[in-house]
Image (cartoon, rainbow, N blue to C red; front, side, top):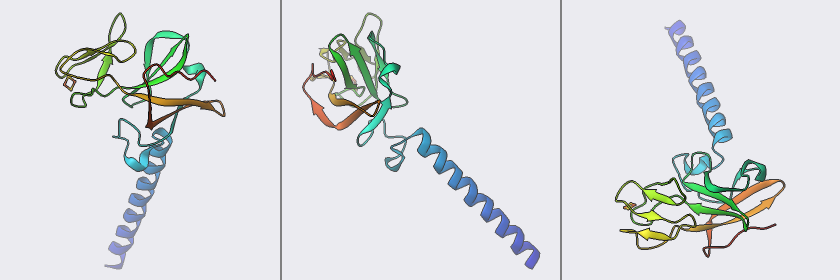
Length: 151
Ligand code: FES
């Protein structure tokens, strides 16, 4: 019986080790792990990457596994929600610019302006800033459409 207890104890230790390693790995890949990596709009300020990862371009960049897009135009950097205001489905960039929602067909211009319903409002813009060489996005702070970070 004592031998079996030692075996169980070792198995428990191994489980705890793997659990700790998984949490640590998750935290490295998902800085907003406290809210769950399933949170497609991170619950607070997060680092999207270095500005160099988002070169000047007409198409939006999806940030990691989120539903947040960075755009970098002549006007500067901006972040736009990738969640459809109709019912929260993810929107995807489309050829020629803009976004489309696969759930019920809403479409949006490249700046998030709704161009076809049933969505009845634009994609949300989030605050962006650059600090310590990182492009930071705060989804808890919305800004008017057309608000670009210029440094
Ligand atoms: S959730 Fe996007 S059109 Fe309905």
